[in-house]
Image 1 (cartoon, rainbow, N blue to C red):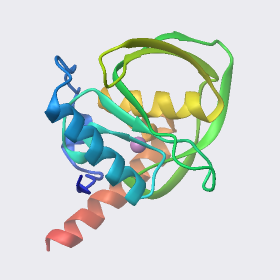
Image 2 (image 1 turned 30 degrees about the horizontal axis):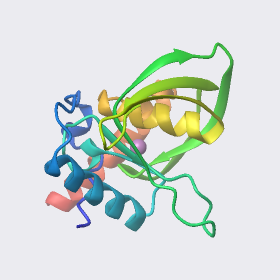
Image 3 (image 1 turned 60 degrees about the horizontal axis):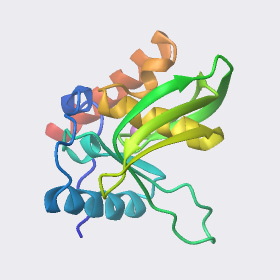
Length: 171
Ligand code: NI
């Protein structure tokens, strides 16, 4: 396993539409291992493969509380099959937009179908933090960021801030 570099705004790869996984082989398993190590190291509760620069439809997640041990979950080729009309708002952050948090409104519940690491198909109904996290990560594999769900004024401000910081690093 290896910790991989997490790409951040304004890296254009964050806007890519990731490719479906065709075969779950050793390369995919290695990718998932690296994603978990990177996610736990950050630390974060969810990660999409594109955040380490790999445009594949793979998500890792662990929503367990600090002291209750790891509950690693993998979602391959995840797809939202149903969204509730009811909405809920919660504060979101993103490892690719470090140290920025903003309230985002999304469907309160979703159903998601996906494959596990053995290629077995599942469908799960999610609510609360699980629903928020799944929608946030599925957005990533479609090239969408949580700041796309906030006001244009706030979004432009954060994009400008990260663009400026990137320029400073280059100089
Ligand atoms: Ni994110």
